[in-house]
Amino acid sequence: MKDVLDEVNKQIVVELQKNGRATVSQIGEEIGISHVAVRKRLRKLLDREVINISADVNVEALAGKIGVLLLEVKKSKDIERLIRLFKDCPRTIFLSGLSSSNLLAIIAAENLSTLESVIGVCSPRVKDCIRRSEVYIASPQMYPRFLPIRVTAQKKASIAPCGERCDSCDAFEKECKGCPATKFYAGPL
Image (tube, rainbow, N blue to C red; front, side, top):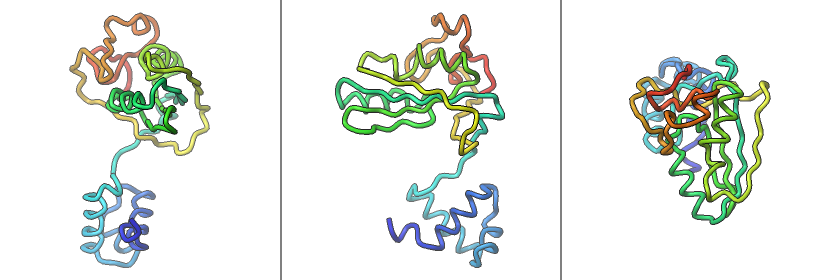
C-alpha cells in the first residue's frame, strides 16, 4: 500500500478531491507532471480500487436527513448477512461491522418523516437478528456536505433491494416516500 499512494499519487488525489471534474492536463499542470503520467497513475489507482471517482449529493440542498444506526446483533455472522441485504439499498450510505457483534449503518432520506419511517419499517434496525439499537438523527450542520447517495434513474422494480414491498407498507401509505429503487417511489432521488 505504501507504494500505491506515493507523494505524486497523493497530489493527484488531492487535486481530484478539490475538483473531481479536473482534466488530466489540469492536474498535470498543477502538480508538475505530464498529462500522460497523470493518466497512467490515475488508471492504476482506479484499477487497484484505491480510489473511485463519483458524483456525491448535497443532502442539505435536497432538504434531506441522515440517520445513524448503532446496532448490536445476536450473532456475529448476522453482520455479514445484514451488509449483504442492505448494500444495494439506495438509502444506505455506509455499513460497517464495529466489532464481532456491532454494526454501524448510515442512511439517508428526503425528510424527517420518511427517515423515521425507514428506520422503523425497513432498515437493518427492524430485522430479527438485532438485539439492541441506538438511532441518531444528524443535525443540518454536516461535514462533508456531499455524500455518496445513490440516485436511481429508472425505477422498475416492485420489490426493494432489501426485499421489502412499498405497495404493502403502512408507512408508505402515510408519510414515507418509498424506496428509490422501486416503481412506487414518490421522492426526488
